[in-house]
Image (cartoon, rainbow, N blue to C red; front, side, top):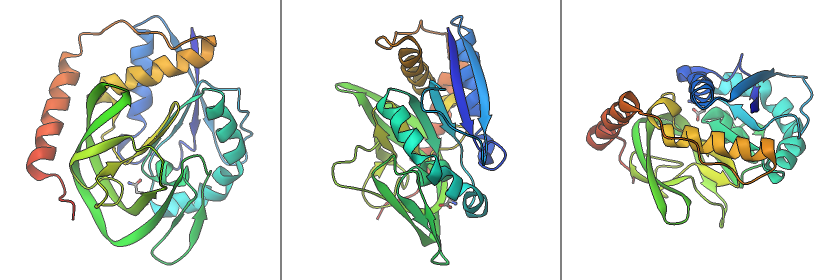
Amino acid sequence: MRIRVGHLYPDYLNIYADRGNIAVLDRRAALRGHELVVEAVGVGDPLEPEAHDLLYVGGGQDREQLLIAPDLAGKGPAIRTAVEDGVAVLAVCGGYQLLGRGYRGRDGSFMPGAELFAHETVAGSTRMIGDVLLDCELEPGLRRPLAGFENHAGRTLLDDGAEPLGRVVHGFGNDGRSGFEGCRLGRAVGTYLHGPLLPRNPWLADWLLEQALGHATGEQPPTLAELPDELEREAFRVAAERARVRGGRRK
Ligand code: GLN
């Protein structure tokens, strides 16, 4: 199968090697005989809700976010329709913030968001920096861990009823208080975790590929064949241990 990926603003939202997430999706798709076709979607480019099976938005600093926020907000209706129709999404940090209602910076300026996730972000006076370990349950009864690295001034508050991506085991998470990290809506996932995220969390890479394949085929998401993942398991183990020893402490 061809898996069509729309990579939003790759020239602006690309800190902490977040592009590496695409490399992992590409490789893990190829190892199962699928082809990832990645299209860059920039400022002024049209976004058709049915054009992709997976949308990806990486992280960026406030300065870069400011440059793309109005355009991303304009793409909000297409992104919301895409997710309603079963398109998968991975959004990291700056991209995650701007898929909510918006982000209020330290200077009081408000960046509008795409209004996909039911959350709002306000910049605080301190940054939340460190390794993170999460406990996720994307499928009822199936709990899986995620490890990564966070560095954000933004505090993201989920609306009542919004589903977090996971519970914080070690680290700050969305706001350093709630014990929640990220947001999940259908096949869309947003998170503060960089690293990049997917090399050390291959189960999430496969989950996203399965959801994207579900959209591409119009059928139930398939179950991809297992891969050896020895290095990936070791990378996860090291990251999870770092989070335990020196992850941020919630209030
Ligand atoms: N500028 C945002 C913040 O500091 C996002 C930073 C990032 O993507 N790492 O909250």
